[in-house]
Image (tube, rainbow, N blue to C red):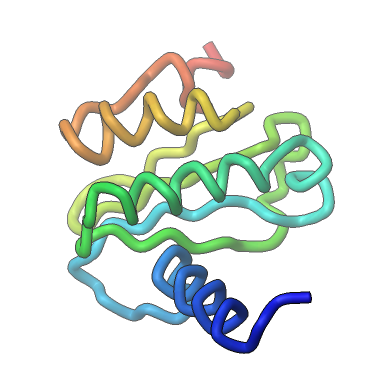
Length: 123
């Protein structure tokens, strides 16, 4: 059984990891589809990977959130990256490993990882 202090520490860590109500319009948003189909396809480790990376790098300008059904079940897990003033980028069939690559290339370096996007699947 966990002590009250341990439970508070876990709560605080999770609140820092995933900000579900942040309305900062200057922040980059990483939105992970967490409907039943996304979760069944493996979205939880993807959400955790992005959350952990944002926290590890101390990136205050990046918010990781979750959403319900995106409507593209065959492409789950789906991650949308929304940067202020830019077009939304939709990544498909994500894994925790791909999330780390997308984080480093897209979030940190500003370069879309094209081979993981939905547009690559539609060609």
